[in-house]
Length: 184
Image (tube, rainbow, N blue to C red):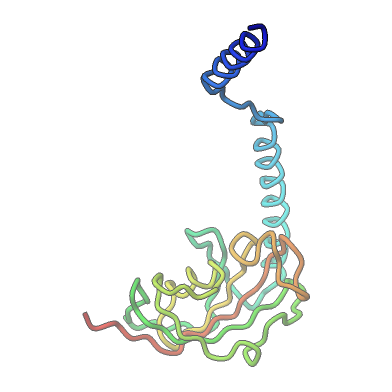
């Protein structure tokens, strides 16, 4: 009998432990908002430093009169069309060329490196930096503009492998060659 009793006690213990309701697991490390706050502060300082550098660049560039875009970058017309013409909107297909330089004037990607680009405005999955996508919407066909992009509108944290470090502003010269609308 004692062996049978031992089996019964063991079976009851296992069933009681097995029926225990699940407990929520606690994270190994609990994070407060301090990491996010530190990141926000770091980004504010980075933006302020980039803005100061960009403003110094624009001040010494006497060939251009820069305008601030609502999207957070600066641009100037190299070739401006004064007559009334449409600008690209969502769905338009555009063909354009561009080159990218650093603020010292060194060409990072030339017109020849890139070639002519065909792009469907705001609907293409192409790998274009946001500053170029937004800059195209400011242009008319046959215009050429110079964009001065802070890093968050260009290559940001990742940079451009082998050519541009992280968090570096760039200058883009953009030529809008053609535009056509899609027939629905």
